[in-house]
Length: 309
Ligand SMILES: Cc1ncc(C[n+]2csc(CCOP(=O)(O)OP(=O)(O)O)c2C)c(N)n1
Ligand SMILES: [Mg+2]
Image 1 (cartoon, helix red, strand yellow):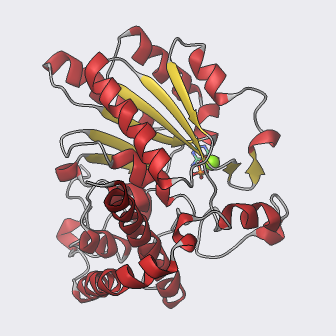
Image 2 (cartoon, protein in one colour; image 1 turned 135 degrees about the horizontal axis):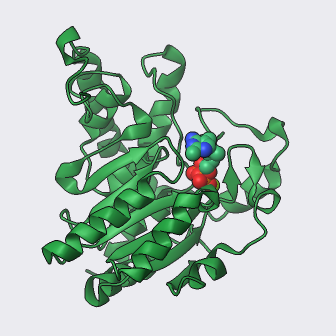
């Protein structure tokens, strides 16, 4: 694949995610989506780059902000919309909603509303992979805010101690709900991770589609080879409010200028020609997925306790 072809492939995947979330925004006021939604608009390059080198048999564990990772890992779009609509054809049979997307058939083992809670799950899966002698790579995806949780530290320590094949991926958007990172943390995430003996890398520009993909792909290959944990922190930026389809600049915890400086480098804004060319087929795919969700039934009463008890 040439560099140009590779860029187009990355661009296509990022654009598809953006258009899916823009459709969620358009649908939200009609109340067909009852689930809270945490949008990744602005952060697409991270999920796309993270999944390039992962096989279907490699596992990822995500957060409530995981539409992008679900799609980048190969999750089914129809089942995603059906899940958002609360329909029985959804990826979790309509019981989980946007915050708990899962697609085990392609290695997305779970995502959770509880901050940092899937990090130890990823470490546990890596421990299983080690004991079973599999060549799997496991990826733990979390935000900057999750590094403030106790279980994050336990997980890093355990993974290093037991030499587990896990890539810790910190998607650092500099924000947690309504507070900036500087108002919350006196430590540097990367230096702190290194203090556990982890090999840790920083990607300063999470909007550089190719560099994000190349760097994370290299780290995935490294984990697969050395069978030890590795850490990567990617600086990125979310455009929308913490939860919901709107904007939140009026809340005062961040400035519109910050958003503007990222937006000017947004890869999806830089190539209108590519966007125009790719958009029609993606829109058609989204139309079909939304229609599938709309036409699907809600779960019948007997579904209530299925997979729960
Ligand atoms: C254990 C726990 N504590 C607090 C919350 C409330 N909460 C939800 S999202 C969030 C911020 C997390 O920020 P970050 O990890 O940076 O992820 P981002 O939303 O930026 O993607 C918090 C504190 C929660 N859901 N779970
Ligand atoms: Mg954050």
